[in-house]
Length: 172
Length: 357
Image 1 (cartoon, one colour):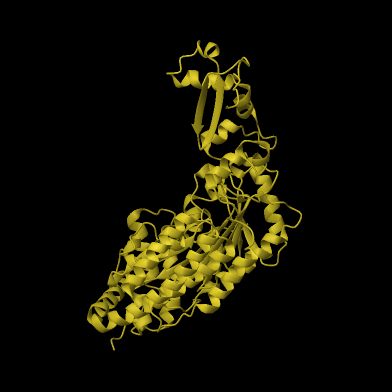
Image 2 (cartoon, chains in turn green, purple; image 1 turned 60 degrees about the horizontal axis):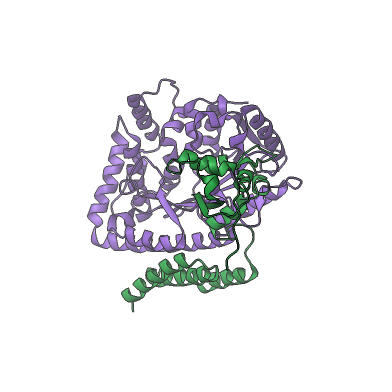
């Protein structure tokens, strides 16, 4: 048995769940038939009004950053944040962006394992006028493939794998 | 505060004849951006607030040894051509005029480094040097970054260094290397080269955006701020990729010389002839001719000293820098081409004439 949903407006049993998506943020609102009756959901305006009435989604819309004054809706509309504090102050922003990025990499120092890989990679790769372009590029790509797999970047890994196959077929 | 024109003419004298000396790699560039915690990003600031923060940052940077002998300009007081010149040298990016309000640019004496408050970041350091020297630039910029000891940068352990534009979250680092690859373009293996760069997350574009790569084969290969690559990893991968491309370019040049020696000779000597005798010279044609002449130097047909001259002056042929050099304020299209021809004749002389061997 699933959990009984309560109407966000009156607290009674909800029969319907409305879902609003935007910039990867998914908000839902449970509502009963009685509360829904005055609204015509065929227009976007009514739909937005209804969400603003809901205490759950209303808190997201009215949150503002104490440092720069940016509100959640503005972040969604403009696609920009106002200051470094916005992430902490607008509570729903970080989970939404985490879903967008799906990666915790991108800054700071290399992990110890990756640093070792990089160092090995430099020492192993020889560059000279005599070595063939394809051979060198192959070793560079293979090293990148290992890193992509390590970092769970599977889309990038697939591109690298295809490129390696192409080169290997060219020079068996 | 001296004018940008004065600064340029002095710098011109100091840097004359300096070059990395490499036949393929022209220069390395590094841009590192940071925002300060607890202060709204520049986009949310008014001109006065921006000016206040910008002045504080510049004052602090002037305490570092590298910027002790530097010059400071208020970007909103510069005329359009002066800003254009700074863009051509890579010190500022293209913004709408209002975004320059209250921003300052601090430029070191030899023009190799600068710092400014840009539209997206409170601090943006720029560093340039001839040849391939990414690690050296990174060490230098890391020192400056860590000199702001009692300031906190806007940083998230999940997303990295923050900026107003979500797409720029990450390392805040943009590194690029500019290459001269006439043989790769001529031989038609350019697609193979860029195809190999794509999986590495590297990007490329023509160094001179207004002209196609086929015409002026000067390409910029870079990791931009949106790439998710870690700084140290980016430096390693970019360096290795550049060395591979340079090796490839040299191989292809040798092959081309064996197969199409006369065609290349024709290109080099025509370029010299055009530069020597022109009266009106558009920017794209000037860059094409200089590229051909540089190829002549690499092959050994033109004197070696011409390489340093070409590397030094190529950027000065663009509109903004040329305006600084020209004594006229009236810079219509024909006037610009005439000034460019006059400028180039200073160093394309009979002694630099190519000799076929």
